[in-house]
Amino acid sequence: SFNRWMGWRLLAWWRLVWIYRRHWQPVMVISGLGRHLHGRDYLPRLAGVTCTSWADLVTVKMLTGQSVKDWTDRIEHLAHGFGATSCRVTIARSGRLLLAFPRRDPLAVPLPALPIPEVVSVGPVEIGQCEDGTPWRLTVHGTHVLVAGATGSGKGSIIWSTIRGLLPAVRAGLVQVWALDPKRMELSFGRDLFGDRYAASPAACADLLEAAVKIMQERADRFAGVQRNHTPTLDDPFVLVVVDEVAFLTAYQSDKGLKLRISAALATLTTQGRAVGFGVMAALQDPRKEVMNVRNLFPDKIALRLDESEQVDMVLGDGARDRGALADHISPVPAQGAGIGYVRLETSPDPIRARAGYVSDADIRAMVCDFAEEANR
Image (cartoon, rainbow, N blue to C red; front, side, top):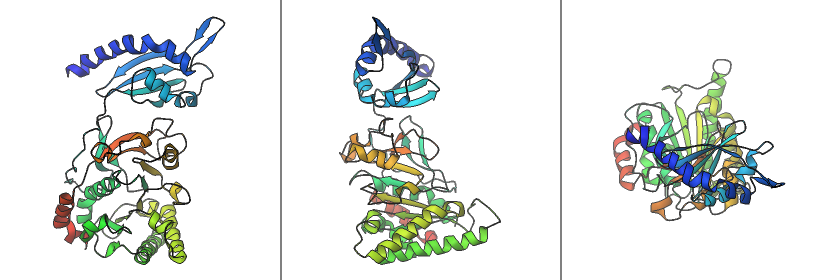
């Protein structure tokens, strides 16, 4: 309570005077955000500083004629100029920006698997923690989610945390999880949770996807003219199709016939499935268009550690890296960076930094032991 009422305010005053106001003019001029014309400085106005437990939030009034891109192109200048490791730019309102300068990393310590919820729900599913300390709740019902990240970046943490959060609804018969595991290494560990809704070989994956499309279309025929949105019931549960390493099926598959079948089924599910209770969660390592040609059909996207800066915008959309989604800077050391990613939702252009809980082998065994029988009904 002291920090909330006094501590952060005193810290904000001190950093306003000693860090930002002191260095404002040279940083603005040298970075090109200010202008020195005819012996006079024209600088953006420093409107205020607010401190939280992990960052300084600096409100800035832009110069007339400046754009947000003028600032997002200079996030590295701003970060180093004010002694921070990074800078994120968001729009506060017309003409005003909010710059976030982290003082520490609240996601540096790995998170254990979250407890299986007691309340039956189809989401949003709590899978970890956001950078500001709030729970990371991932929406899966009514959307599709694309998870991209290099090897060892923690894609399994997001997949298993999502499945873990849906288990009470699976037990209640309101959710079904269909699993496609072409690598046979990730989802196979909890295979008993999926029963006959698990596929590993390319041919079996194509059959399972086409079976999902058939059920989806039958449901759409029944819903036509009756309802526009899906409410999970025992007769029409929410179906989450989880595809691990989708590139093995859409890009690296040598059988062209299977590749076409799989690509067509995925495109059908992602374009028609949301309204009738079908969602797709797909994970991949390489986000290039030729590898995943339906990536734009996923409204919600998560970028874990990526190898190249260009890949960030491939996953999260144009301008995401300029706004501070530095997925290519996440540590490759598993204990430090696995499970950390930037989330860009359909409803917001600003990326959110978060970390998913790590679901260990022992956690998955316990999930199978407690929920396998109900999941296979």
